[in-house]
Length: 191
Ligand code: GDP
Image (cartoon, rainbow, N blue to C red; front, side, top):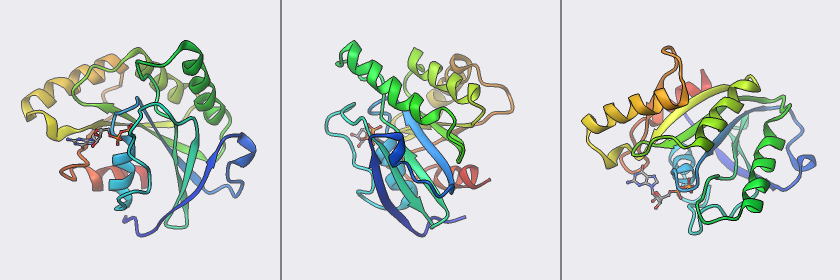
């Protein structure tokens, strides 16, 4: 599979603004700064389709991108940015959950975790939500170029254990900088 066309559709504030045409959706979630915008840009081979964040955690919007005219990529707000108030945190939880609950066209959720860090409580909660709502999680370890293969191997084990992944579930190693894992992720999305 190849991504030939990618087009921004809408930044939705409310559920009523989500596309209604029932094309399959794949959502992207992760902590602020995990590399989500870079990953979406890398997958779609576009430099600025998803903006890379100057101010992490600022966006509260659900962004829809039409891919190859046959599915949507859905960019959900980054969570867990340390410097926000409790109230702001609650508002993201709401935005993400509003989208995830009963979203019929949604099939898979790509969960990004920075390969250098142990997943946080928010990551674990996110992973559990994905499963709870019966979507298929695709776990991606981002910024793989930043550490040695040896460290990466160790960290993947920690990520797997912390999230409570089963043996059958794989983690895709990814680097936007070095274009590692791109085809593998596209295949997992289209599988
Ligand atoms: P977002 O907040 O999750 O959308 O994260 P961004 O895509 O904006 O990335 C956050 C920071 O990490 C930026 O400074 C990016 O340049 C950097 N970054 C993202 N992906 C990679 C990667 O694969 N390798 C390296 N070395 N840096 C990355």
